[in-house]
Length: 187
Image 1 (cartoon, rainbow, N blue to C red):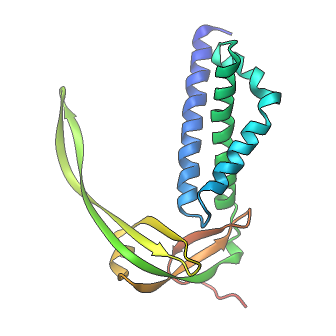
Image 2: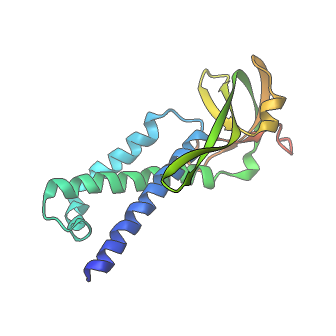
Image 3: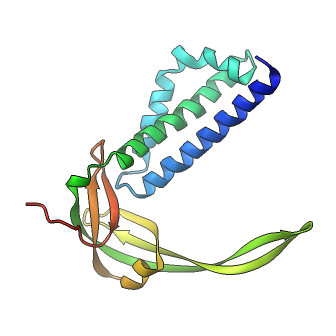
């Protein structure tokens, strides 16, 4: 393979794994699960496949060093498994299993941020924008900090209950659909 094509494949694989990891984390924010469980699944799967697949990474890394290939295997396969676990649970959630659950809004957080842009070599402050967060507590004691829209932020009060539409995820972990009661009631 040509050196240029190999570099394109390396950069593309790195960018794809980075996007998969970020999307897996975004799915984690909308899923009711303890933080260590998806990490344990991803690391466990990556460690279990090291003896089988770590030698094949020398094509992509260009190195015969086993430690570098194992590290790339842990990062690459771990990130892919994290995405498959969290993304699969979130994206394949059953829409027919919607149900309402009461949460308590423990804190409302409003932040004003500034965009920056470049003028020549300088970085200049631009317009301001607002970001809204809610700290919520579920009935079982699990707590989350979630970014929400301004309309949801304005409709909530601190230390008051709110109904959230939940779905059963593909792997059985509940997924937060939206703030508000479900459209149709379960019978």
